[in-house]
Length: 393
Image (cartoon, rainbow, N blue to C red; front, side, top):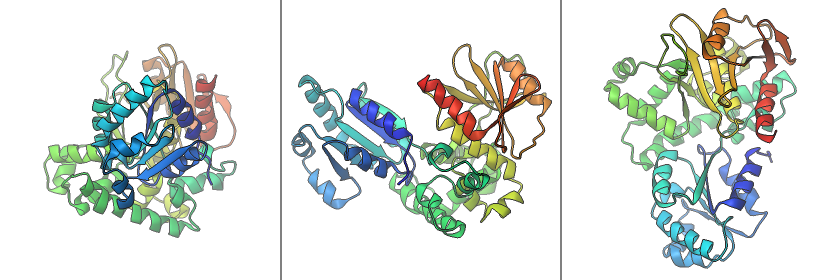
């Protein structure tokens, strides 16, 4: 059993708000975490993809009203949008009776419908928490091979825990097919599975880059607006990350298009046919794969309110990640694979452009030490810990 860092946050939030929506891609471990939380209190669990559990909710108001002071866990809530209005009435009734927190834990594998439906019905009554795949602080990471395992296989627990890299890639292939052949059609999005997979694979080849929708559209035989909708779908399903460019306080000609990352590096590698670490080391995507891995791990531990961006100016100034910690605290982060990376002057220019007060270079080594221009070389887990300390400090 893997301990998830987000567990304490979910439990603490449940105690102060009536409903918590835990959002994440399919198979990231939401149900496992919900069962762990359910065992710590009086609770009832309903899977809304189960016909038996749906039968219990033929009269949802009566059934849920009978649960008393139990924490009601509703899994795959996006399949029962009509429940939101019922939950609103129950929450208000419980509030009047003096019960404020620990009423409902809602699990959703797709964010777009869930956010729209619940925001309309449960405004002021619900808190959203995103659950990602496993990060480095949740698995062994003291040895290079430990980090390589998570990087290659990705952070879906079943993929990470498989008996071999080959078995991991087989599991990931089944996950990809499930999304394309089942989940996307279920949410009513009319796109051929083969076409969406081609786009997903194109994004894998463009990992960490801006994309030209018109060029992608030409390769897919659709128009650019259709490609934009497909991209929105993959982002809403929490499978692709759209990282927005920094645009504040910089008097330069800036790149203003977002960068896209396939969020899980296991899926990235499966889409590209990379089967093992040796294959990854010889693939042109190596540097961008590590960059995406680092970005996802760092963003998984961001304190509430920290805003992530990237920065790139037409003159070559560039920072892979810009973290706006507060109005006066701005971090510039460069991400490099290897234990002796060369640091581009463009990174220092970028940090100067944006007014960063701290500069870090994430690299593949194990030690933390300062280098020129007030920059710190830091292993990925160490920078993750610095971000966690901001929230607890």
